[in-house]
Image 1 (cartoon, rainbow, N blue to C red):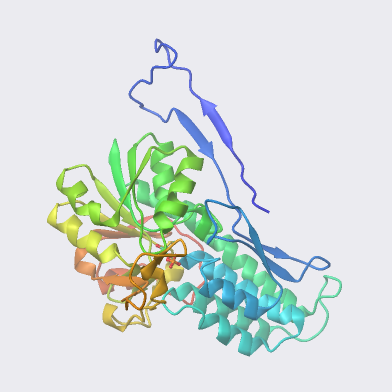
Image 2 (cartoon, rainbow, N blue to C red):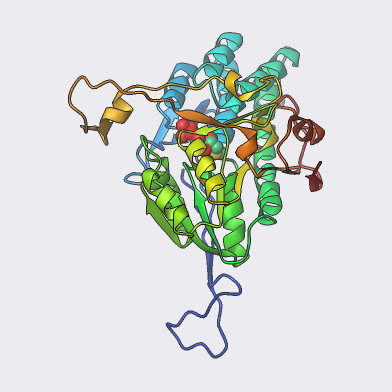
Length: 393
Ligand code: MRU
């Protein structure tokens, strides 16, 4: 089920002896790859949702098949499927799964929305899918054995996935404008094809920078406690042929102080109306460090991650997770039995620390409530990407 397309080309360089790599004006190697982290299965194999199990990467490429909504909710809670945009896609297909099975669709949408509270894409997509089901008339669809209502929810889920892929490509284009030549970029958590129907959010910009010959090095925070950076981003970076180096989260301060970071790029799980950004825990610390060291701190997220109904950062619900995620590593205890842990999955970065937010419609810079609203950001809309627009006040 893992579909990986690899295009590998080596540019011949005039006058460069074999084995010697000249300073790249363009990338020497370009590998284009797409990973399919989620797949809908129609009958007779389905209805079901196949997920690439992200808890097992990079050691194993294993698939989890969800044939009902409780299984999907469990997979979401365990981070088998994760990352804000992909949670939206999964949530919408989950509502379709309930419809296809003849289950209680409203209860399914509620259960899916509550599976993880911070990434707004999940509840947003479940709500859109439920609305499609409610609006569709009863009757039979063109697809044999499928009700018109199920077909309507499936069409909505596919539209959300398609929009995410388009948004990803558009964000890559807009974000590239902020990447200097020979950039050394630091990133946190995991924001590539594993979390998107396209090439992701921050990672899509990083890939665009690599293809444009502008990426000198990708610094990857390991991202404790669940190591999304070490396990997933390093895996994606290696597959894409990016020059990359892993560091412990706590080494980021020393790295920035040494002058080896030109740009910090992260994704987001929810952006409040005031421009506050909830993202994987550790992001706020990076933003503080970036300000201290005069490094631009840029967030890349689709409009589906913007939540104008949450007025400000302190109102964002942050998910707290099990102590065991901190007191163990790869299933082994790293703290004495009974040690209590404080384990927020996310933190909130205030807008004053964010240089720019890159969306599919362009850049928000500076990050202010007015600029976010002017961009037409609406978590309830399904508008497609539009022309680039700098919003500056
Ligand atoms: O807990 P996770 O792994 O779902 O957290 C994911 C992140 O924090 C990502 O940075 C975020 O979803 C933005 S990426 C598209």
